[in-house]
Length: 167
Image (cartoon, rainbow, N blue to C red; front, side, top):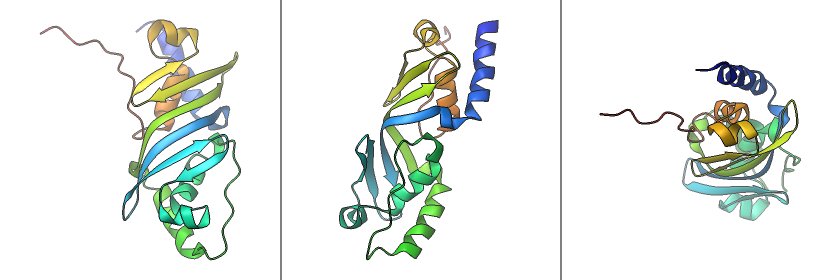
């Protein structure tokens, strides 16, 4: 491992302590709830969830949990509670969900990552990573992607950087 990679690993550890540097532009994920699996999307216009509760109230425990988990990385305000919503039950369920990250499988995202030198765009699409970072373009990995792997551990597939060993 060369010094530049060691520096990137150290930088990723430092960045991971500052998740507010990262802002989701878009996010698409699968959320396994207690009763079913739901598709959730975040766009610049806001959240969408395929569950009946979101369809009825415009908010649900799944999104409430995601707002808690990703709070420093969101550009949208938390959704307000809705008339008729079972707030106590939904808040309790959202708190539990926010502690059970294995329920979340991220399918796609695009983030703005405020690095030390400039803002980079990092994308993830079903296990395929990309970044505007020149280091990433040369090495297929970088401080920005390593930071996101660390922050989203278990929710995304890691970058494969090792080449297969000859048999």
